[in-house]
Length: 263
Length: 306
Image 1 (cartoon, each protein chain N blue to C red):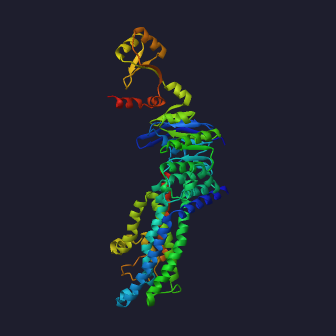
Image 2 (cartoon, chains in turn orange, purple):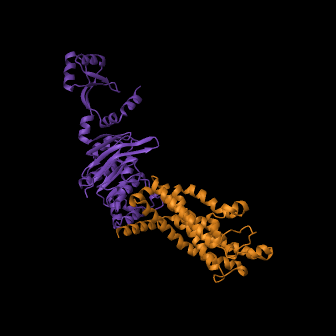
């Protein structure tokens, strides 16, 4: 099929683009270092303070979630990586060259999304498991192993979450066509919710369906009590569906923007 | 595969502004076709629509009967230089050409070949952001030539080039046309087009003003006059007026006589005993002809008057 060869060529070109800029190495390295580093720090501090916690907090303590706190910060750099794949095309003006080489918007966009997601998929696999083992080691007696109930599922959830957030950020960047604007929206979205909005009861009813909240549920093993502030109305399976819906919506929105607007 | 570009009824409106207004023309292979118009006339917008980057409000462009978007491996069919600065500064010169080559299944050896051709082989592994404007322009031309295409579009290619670079690109365009390719070059400088192009498409405010050969354009649009320098301009004017010749005063104080010949003016001066320092035939410059056509001449004159 000539079309298949064309799609493969477009994908190979996008893969060259990813490999030939330094920002790829820096953003991914930063993401890994922050995720693992914070994972170890949080693990140590939780391990040290566990004995002093009240019973409710001890019962609701989730070692996997605690170990992945670093990931929620480290994901920012991965999101930056995703946003840059589209944003840099617009800031540098290479978008026109890209569309001259691959004028079919769908093929160009599909190749870009695929190359970026594949990079994120492989990268996240390493980040998630290195972070997991490092953090669980730092948690000492409170740590868990992959074989414990729900743990493998939670780590797979984290892996899926990171990959999908990278894809989500490409879609948002394609709609907004600006690195700065996209990050200005994405970073507060990723931080404000988990740190604040998501835990305010009234706002939570709605805010819990935002992508990072769904991700948090996927990375957990302990089902927290309904009275506890981190309680959510859905489980990890539903969370994955919510996250997939967000990602699909962003990617479709990005494609529509690319098709409808002049570059 | 002949390389004919057909522009049919092409318009582009941005809100209430019309950038391109129902343009129709055909660009043929084997010659350099100049696309001439003042800045803001709609040249770049037209070229972007020819390449399916911008969506036309009306009309369409066909390249060998197909829309750009439908071409398979388009870089092998059409090469374009739009903005030379539109490269990712962090990527090397070599890698800047490597990804488009890969996307259109052009062998990687061709990257080195075109870099040699434009004289950038020595900086192939430098980052693109370190290039001077002239070098960036050469890189843009290398990108256009990457697929060895039969159709080439250059948007203001001499911008930012030094005299040596300008000469180089003029010869390159002529050579490409001599090889039978379609070469379509935009410029806001008539003098530049007179040196390179054989055919001209002239637009102003988005409308087609002329579609003709360069020779015919010059013939039709330039008017000659007799330039006279004399210490007695008032007597000279009176003498010329007496034989029904229209006289204008040039900016530097010389007189311009229209509808007569230098010999007749000389004989008239001798008969009247007038002192003259210079009597010569002057061909109005192409730039003037062009400005008159695009309606800018009036504004320039007004601005230049005391």
